[in-house]
Amino acid sequence: MAWRQLFLICLAAIALLSTLREGAAVSAGMRQVAGQEAQEDVEEIFMQESDALNFLKKRSKRSPRPQDEVNVENRQKLRADELQREYHEEQRNEFENFVEEQNDEQEERSREAIEQWRQWHYDGLYPSYLYNRHHI
Image 1 (tube, one colour):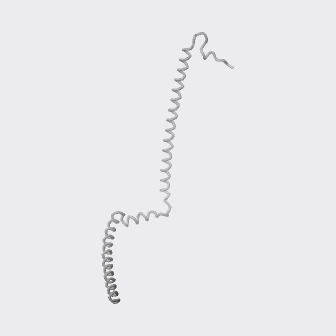
Image 2 (spheres, helix red, strand yellow):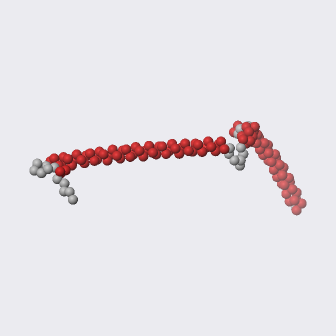
Image 3 (tube, one colour):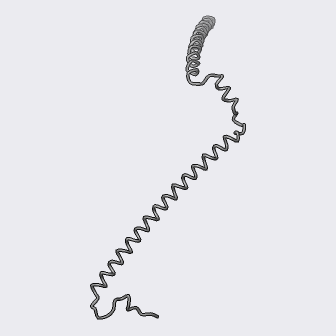
């Protein structure tokens, strides 16, 4: 009886190993097909190798930037700062002009109201307020 159990276990192991080998062969074949498809996709996404090498030859990551490139970038920054400064100065001038006009209008309305009040209350017996000041 022990011989029969050992024989059945060996048969089961052989069947299992053969099944695993077939599965591994099939999955390896699928991997090769998937690898080819992925390679085709990669070729569509990335640039040609020669173009990439030329790009990397121009300047590597750690090499310093050329002075011309630095100068151009600094000029762009200075121009942007100048435009921003001009814009803010223009906005400030417009606001100052607006405030000045508002104050002038308010002073004019106030002066007219005071003049009307003086004309209404003046009875003709004494000179107007401007000539009736007390000087200290």
